[in-house]
Image (cartoon, rainbow, N blue to C red; front, side):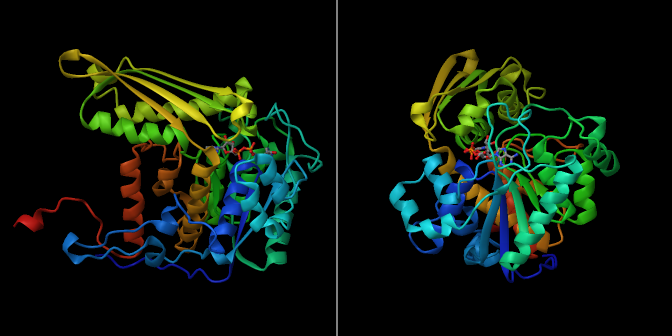
Length: 437
Ligand SMILES: NC(=O)c1ccc[n+]([C@@H]2O[C@H](COP(=O)([O-])OP(=O)(O)OC[C@H]3O[C@@H](n4cnc5c(N)ncnc54)[C@H](O)[C@@H]3O)[C@@H](O)[C@H]2O)c1
């Protein structure tokens, strides 16, 4: 046992600022409202339903996570956010078409009260989107200052004790790190000079970190994952997490692939295709936004299979990922995976997976969990990359000297061990020799 880490209590209100009030955000917000009124269960949320084993198996100590670590209560959450469309949260949820109108009606008043603040938006970074609710500014520095003013006035207006910001906006075009991203000074100079290397999402992340807020990126954009942001996070003691929430097909991939690898079954091909008809699908129909998503979706298998260690099993893996925009399905995505396996003596086999999922229904609980855990991290004095939150992301942020951990089960163990560490409980190694001595 080690001594517990000092964690400030979760007193007062927690403001949750969501960038982009689209399908994921409105499903999260309306869901939290319905859950706290006892109208629906928080299925899929580890913070609300998960338990954690403590000590030896014989001790029978398995509290709920929310009773083990001091998380903010759902009753203390206040939502706000930005969008390029002027619709309030109720209208936006109706547009997104994820939750049933009758369910939205039950929380209509609360949803209508959330009106999006004017966004920082530049169509060059999201080609398939345009809207009227957009800030004007002298340069990107000025836009960042306007966001900081929004953050401060939201905090004052709602009497928030703490805030968290999550980018739930559209997927921006594929971008690579440049010299502008190297240091806080080069980044601020680039803001001043309106450098193209700074997309809208980075302006939000910068504003959040400047204010010392925890920040997460639910999309695959290059947003907070640059040296300048990490330096700022360290300076302002902000925890950060990302990128791209692990829902749908990649969630299933990181459940199945570790199992195949554990049994040393070879994989020659993995073909993944999706049809998706929501606004996210429309944005991803643009090849430049799709490239950002594709890079994020493709990385998981390489890391899980470790082809450099198992060349006979995985070196020739052909991994293809497709997303097709198909409006009739709306948010109800359908994914197909065909996996070409190799077994004993090289005999081929096939596995087919057909997942009829609901994208935002899978995303909402993990937005909620990320918010609550990032707020916990901040109160526990943890800043910079929160690798223990890899569990929630397709392209987990990680230190430059280590590879990212994609295996869902290792990610969960890391998350729970972090909670045990915070509370001074013994870490669980699953060795268990003591039961047989
Ligand atoms: N749904 C999922 O399961 C899932 C999983 C992983 C990642 N994501 C990512 O999460 C993001 C949100 O997904 P969604 O389904 O809610 O999409 P959506 O299109 O319904 O919502 C995105 C919203 O962001 C707004 N927006 C775009 N740029 C903005 C800006 N600069 N400032 C403010 N608002 C802006 C759009 O107007 C839109 O309302 C996407 O990038 C998506 O790829 C979603």
